[in-house]
Length: 391
Image 1 (cartoon, helix red, strand yellow):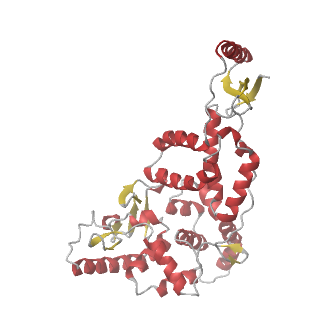
Image 2 (cartoon, rainbow, N blue to C red):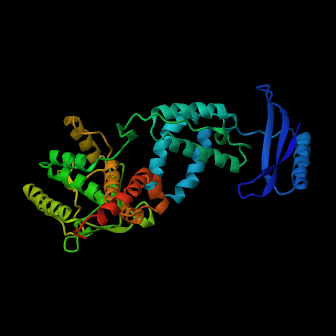
């Protein structure tokens, strides 16, 4: 029996949808149906249903196209990719390489909340970023709902499980992806004789810049006199081709002040880099064109900008060869900088601007427990100040 039902749209307004039954499929013996949404009034929906039934009576039931999740994904991605950067599109495709084996072959109408819940539970056991996979899958189903391929979105009924964290060790009862001041100094001391690695990890921990932002730097982005670093681009590789893109957010375009030690580290590396170019008789470029982070590319037989995964590999090697080091990720050096900033008394606004967060709420969300701890120390700092006779 055909149905006309009222539903509430996202903007709060109401509309009607029609579910029309078109008899049985002679091949499968299953009942065939079609749906259409977006009717402003019940009268409009009823008029469509009457016209459809008259057409079925005269010409027979129209062929209903079966759409797989993969087909809907490709249709959605074609539109969505026009609104995002090439680097974001590539990252999105990489995520769907894991999503499609689970959903791609399924008829979009046959996907149930129970199946979605099962897949989410499996992802939670395997992936730290399982929530993001759920978000991306959900976008495809939202698109299917918008295009009237399905009436309800099964992902809306999924409950996100509590993840089992396999990656970070516990420190004071928490999982921490950053080093303490002592741990950072210990780490850097172990790579003091590796100028390239030392410069990168020192700069990451002392500036809080993202990996892609650091690897995109040219020497013209450093002002040694003013002790400033200018962030205006990020590095992206696709099919062995390098691209310099605008940063993640508008707020990511920023100027970062550098401490005297970091200036010395960069000056030393600039001299060392020049020596390496001389050794292979390759001229070094002018500052505005010369990348800060380069190494020798065996295939091209010349110095060139470092690939994005290079320092990930170096970090794995360093930690593996030094058992006393706690495991953190490359991004953990950005967190290290933020945590040390907060511990030193920097305000949340200072942290937001230095890290290039798009808004202050992002800073609070990421570093809420550290900010609470810093706030708890305020009374002790005031007490120490009031009892210090030198002030």
